[in-house]
Image (cartoon, rainbow, N blue to C red):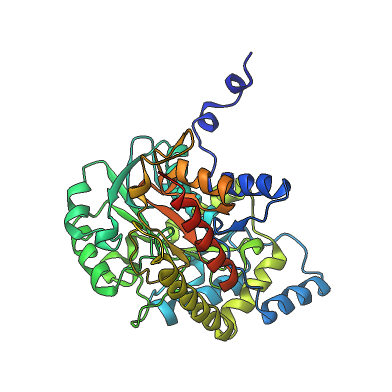
Length: 401
């Protein structure tokens, strides 16, 4: 029997994460002795703040190494609730918080507990690669609402209104966005809310993992703070991006208690609680100073500006100004149809494979995020590497005829 026939169909239907696939390809190229500039991973290149690391060390020394409640230690859930009230005007209590092994698990918890087979989930595109596969795993139907570079990659109220059907169960979006860096303003979210308020059976999953990496002059705004949507909004956040804690694997959800209880039930069967030591580190991050977070954000803004200036050197690339996260998602479709030798560039995946193989720069195709005309460039790297990457990309694209 074919081994694929033995594996469950739900797994055969899943695609490998394209970001992880490109990381694998980059390692293969590097193993051949090439110097690869890696702008493919959505990972801060900073170290975790010292006070967070110290809290983890103390937890180890204090032998805080036993199982914790599935939803997280009470003091962390309480601190998160206080943070959300202070910073996001989300009036939740500790019982409305569940801590998970990263925001990715948090999103999976939300989708798997809310979506039945055939339910429609409206997803704003470009979207993070994993949204599609999690919805597929839940046997839901993803309904894509696409916003292009000319709209700053932000969906309009009219687009959202036109996508809603009697089968719509939820909408899912990220702000700041992975892969575009687009940030919805308060005014824009309130306009989307006006469309959603009459639809009492539609829930909102707001992925706010990049909250602290926003370059807007106005305060960050959470759609769940709109009173009419409070009981229908699942707010997802975590520590990986803002606090440079990707490997610590701590994310969380704030939602009505009945949703949190359902996620607790699911998580209790999959992973139980996340790492006890990581939870103590997250507590220190939540309660401590944000000075290091602000410094990282300032550096990201500098890098964004540097990349935009550098990309101007390359003809036929269409850029925009991202307002957050650490990505640029330029339109590179002008290079489709060109070739190098017998290699024809038909789409963004072909272009990314050409650039990793020819000039050794690792990027991710826009197709992975639902928009094939673009590529994702992560500028979570040093100025030197960013300049070198653009230099190589320019050289590689110039070879295409």
